[in-house]
Image (cartoon, rainbow, N blue to C red):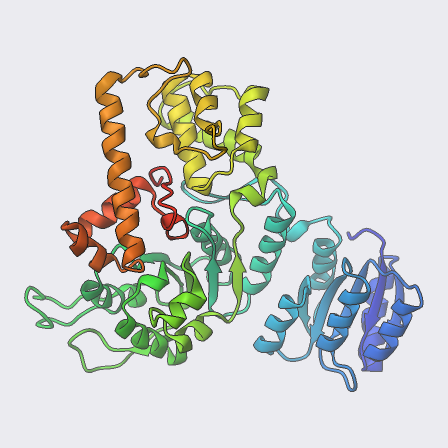
Length: 473
């Protein structure tokens, strides 16, 4: 049962106001009522400080959204749950953007109301109470920082609104994890979840990968094959690195977003599917729109709701949890005893900026576990004399300043890798991250370039400074 709370109930229907007030008073909540947005705002201006506001969405005069916006200005920390007789997706999304904690569709049962109050007042924070939330094999979510707790709350709300969601953030921040969380919390959780990396599949093959093909569509197409959208019918699909999708193919994707229909490559019949589309990218959106790498109409379709995933350096509260969880997983995987984190090593991890985010942290733990050398691990994270951090993946010297265990060959190999990564980053910058052009400039195949980008963990946000991240996990 909910903790006793001071609740402000705002609804213009007298019958509904009495009904909800009765439900709340059964649990001994102290209930204040208002029949208009203006009245509610006046109460708050005069000093009322409710623990929770239950706010009707559709009211005469100042409507629920306007009231919500002004309430958040008067009391930024106030928790608000929207009430509505109709499931208006646009208004619900607007309410979430304005900071609503949750919403209820009228009429609702007492159990539904109790659950929402419990979630909002902290007795059951969106059913998330543990430090690490397992989503799938080797996929987990951590929300130990205020930013990530807010994002999880938003993900839980938007999961129940069947709209596209665009996830933005640096490479390695956990955009795929967020997508899996949305799927798990949605009504489609028992259905298929598929991820398609738009950068890993050459453009001429991506269309058939997504939409399938009929027999005879191209040389070698001896049998019809369904695409990912058909395989994912009734489920959720994540289009990762959506900014790398060929411009022409984006038009076909826009059509799917508009009416959920498409044709297979080489086919004439129209196929209708019911698929929740999530998208993720680390590109600079304004730059991609200006350079015609991303269609503006597609962007606005995908951008029904946006989740900006912060880099690890902005959520350092999670580093100790992540270190211990990665170590536990790695030690089990490699059948080794887990290594401890001394205060000195923990402090070095907290001070390091982790430009490769969770992916880099994961690889750091892997190296520490395999090498078993705490001093070497600490030295990897120390800044250079100029205050910058070198890439741990390419450091060959030990704490004594020598060549390290690998000798001269190790140093030569590290220098070669570093030079190669810098050349790739430079080519990507010069071609505005057009991977096909970069591959031609470097005189290597497109697949080889993709492999090396993953191998060296080169992220677009760092390419201009030729900053290399450690190899992707």
